[in-house]
Image (cartoon, rainbow, N blue to C red; front, side, top):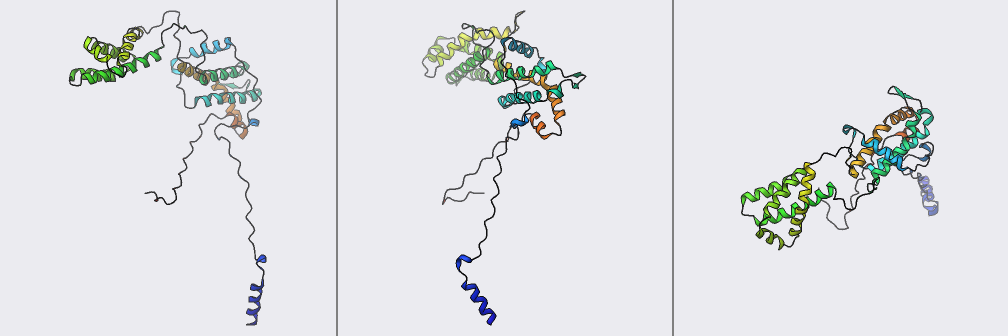
Length: 316
């Protein structure tokens, strides 16, 4: 009993400030935000800094000619995130510049990698970035202000006009099964030849004065659409039936087609150096990071919103 008495005195006599305090758990240092695991290579892993590259018109013309000389089977479609991929080409060029001493003379596919091959990487990557990220670049020859619209612009205008006129004629001939079938075929006719056929058929249906007067009274631009068909159909038909290029002339590619050829040229002409560089970098984490291919970043998952206070729980 005496022992229990002294234990109780000890416990209740301790001041509150002397109560045991649990020391706070040490705060772990915040983890550094990971770099872009796909493409953000630290500066000290990118090799020697690249020299400045300002392309001349002669260099652009030579690269343009090489891209246009690619066979059709070598021309690739533009991948997603093409601007970021083009920027990655410059980073890979920096890696090649840093590893130049080991790359030059390395034999691959029965031939050594030459100094000229390495010297051409930076102008090529710079030009590719110009073409694929600035698709509004002017051509090497000034555009003729009086030239007719290009195929893409004319096809878009014809397609829009055909849609407007089809809607109007479908309303006018709602009770005529034969004409409804004609209009339906015009709507679904695809390709350049389909546009030419459709415009011709619709103009034939709009030839009579009564239909022309009725279309002129409609409020959604039907008369202007018919005028577009009358103005563009002859030129479009001429282009469709005369696709061949005159001897000695070269049809100018669209900006997108030129971007595809520029990208494809880089894939073809840089392939040997990239393969050699990745072989030399294997086993060295920093070098492997500098030489790795572009990888699209992962999409962020949407964070679900917390339900408002008092709201009913979601139904599962």
